[in-house]
Image 1: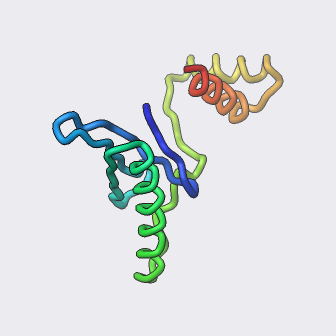
Image 2: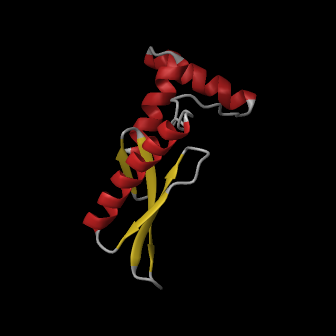
Length: 111
């Protein structure tokens, strides 16, 4: 997935072949924040402007902006897999959270 990051916000980037533009939307928040550009530079600038505008708009409206990902999420797996994960973590000398975080980090960055 193509993404951009700024001030803790992540945007998913796509290409629209019909309009010949790049466009993106911030992911991981309830509000909808989108932007577009014809070049990568325009897209990046539009993303930065969109985040800054979103934060300023929330401030002017007297409300807290949606926070980007908190760093916590719940994953439901069957009990036997849970046991295998716990055993792998123990074998690695890590807590379950540390082992899962390290494993996910390795998978995400191995592309």
